[in-house]
Image (cartoon, rainbow, N blue to C red; front, side, top):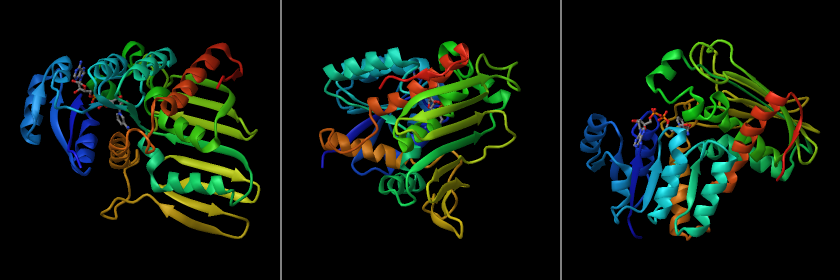
Length: 340
Ligand SMILES: NC(=O)c1ccc[n+]([C@@H]2O[C@H](COP(=O)([O-])OP(=O)(O)OC[C@H]3O[C@@H](n4cnc5c(N)ncnc54)[C@H](O)[C@@H]3O)[C@@H](O)[C@H]2O)c1
């Protein structure tokens, strides 16, 4: 099996998850890291035993690099994806793949012309609980789905925003809670619910209003394409990071995701289906531990000529479309029908 060489652009908070995932993916080598912060990048390159570039365009000229991981602020995703595709690279980008749907269209067109594919990091779909729930819903064990509700209550302090100046600014983050943290929840909702046909949503900023341009709170009601109902609430101003709480109400009972465990609840029983546990037996981090699976899945797809499943641009666009539609619905104060 040919070794694939990877480079990571952006050595901030999330990059270590990519480093760990690359270390645990067979026949993959981290060949370079890139960051505009020269001191940080040089120190990390020495630690990882790889090259350092301050300018990502220079890294893209290295023909030995096959796959580029994009772990930078949101406003840089589209230009970096386009440049990497034009240089003939495969691209694995952190969520959100872009700032809005018009950028997504540009990326799709570039991907159509390119050899490389674009994979997007929605690692929570690959949690054991998510995979089990999706399979149980596909089989219809508890009958037809009547509603799916999701609640995400996390804590982002003012220093989280002030430590990385791009966060909390519309021009660089493209929104806030919805496009950054809750986009994972929206992705799971639409992935489990089979697509949203219309929604009505509201966003607001309360406790973080002195710190960020955008929302720290959002809620929405959805109608899924098969008629089921969706209910969504998220905030970034709680006092701790509570693991996602999600409930699927079906004709003959409900599936409940709570504290990273999936339960089947009927009139007579509450039965544990599965839990997300790290390999050392500890409970998973509140934001998921699926980076290893997501990275491996993308590298498998590269080796397989794009036939093996991975989360690509069209998949990634679904949650971004929901983000954009909730913002618009909140402005207009009305239901919005989504075009598929
Ligand atoms: N999948 C997840 O659960 C998850 C979790 C956290 C963050 N993220 C995503 O990861 C991305 C990065 O977030 P973060 O929290 O690590 O941000 P961060 O601010 O901690 O790090 C960003 C890094 O990019 C570098 N950078 C900025 N401009 C650059 C440029 N032109 N060239 C090279 N490097 C540049 C910065 O110096 C910094 O080191 C975002 O898209 C975010 O939404 C995903």
